[in-house]
Amino acid sequence: MAQPQRRAELSALNVLFCLMVAFYHIASATLASLDHLSWQFAAVLTFQRLACVSLPGFFFLSGLKLALPAPGRGRTLPQYYLSRAKRLLAPYLLAAAVHYLVFVRLGWYLFSLEDFARQTARGSLSAQFYFIVVLVQFTILAPAFQGLTKRFSAVILLPPALVITQYSGTFFGSLAQMFPNTPLRYYAGSIFTNFLFYYLAGCCAGANYREFRALLEKNRPLIVAMAILFTAADQIGSVLHYSGRIALPYLDSLHLLYYISGILILCSLPARQWSGGFARLLGAVDRASYLIYLYHCLVIALFNLYVPSWGVTGVGAQFLLRAATTYVVTIGGCVLWQGLWSMGKRKFSKESEKTL
Image (cartoon, rainbow, N blue to C red; front, side, top):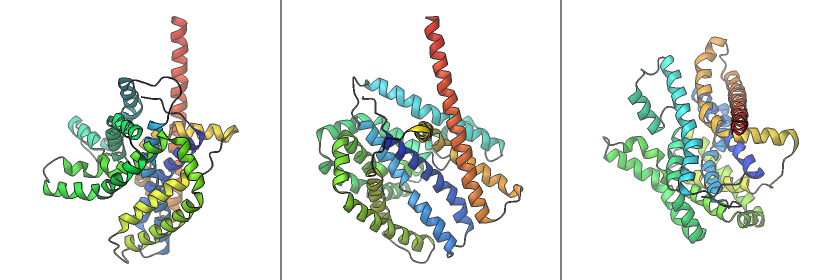
């Protein structure tokens, strides 16, 4: 398995997706408190729906980084799985334990190791954890995806993957209803086929990264036009549907078109090489992005619990304060922890070298 390269444009995209995921959950509590027919609801929902591109974007980016060619000798399969266990599973298990202990302390759960293990496996302790369950499945299947993208063309691979992704959720949801007493009811929304197209498209892009960038550059006018058209259609349709004005049966198809065009337009942005303080900040947030993803909902949950006691009762004021608190506390705390962890590892490594 090759070690993925860290590129400036991908780091910037990763940070953007991270901030967008956090905003999606920040906006959720506000939307629940607003009149669905009000302009405020429409405004917040529009920005929240814009942020929705981040989830398929994360899967696309994960596949792209997996398939990126790396200089020198790559890792073996056991080394790859060990690395992913350290970087993906270990932080998740710690985050799940922190969430569970906090929720037990608040009285939301009664402590049970069995319950903790079950909810951790399902990814049900926090709204964003199901993403980890899906990513683990893609990680296990990583050799298959690398083999497919090396042997076959994206033109052949992506159309059936798109159809599978489009209907996977409906299929497994119906299957779960047919067999309600099976574990499938807990995993219907976190089966890897629900996001297959985005991950596989990322693998295809990563395996041919230079050609992919050139393709985006050549077709940028069309990509921009598609992004404007599909984004506008998706936002208008979402406001009409989620406000209860009109039921749109094909809204998922609009979402799909927006996600694809949104990922393409963001990937087609110029690959700028950042420098100075901004580059250091971007790099720090990029390195801490997984932690930010894991913990931002816990900050939001605690904020929602305690904000009434602070005397802040207005929906708008709570929204602004929730956003500021979530970004400052989560990003600041995770960047600080990541920095201290890296310093500790370097210090331990130096002391080990002296001992030897």
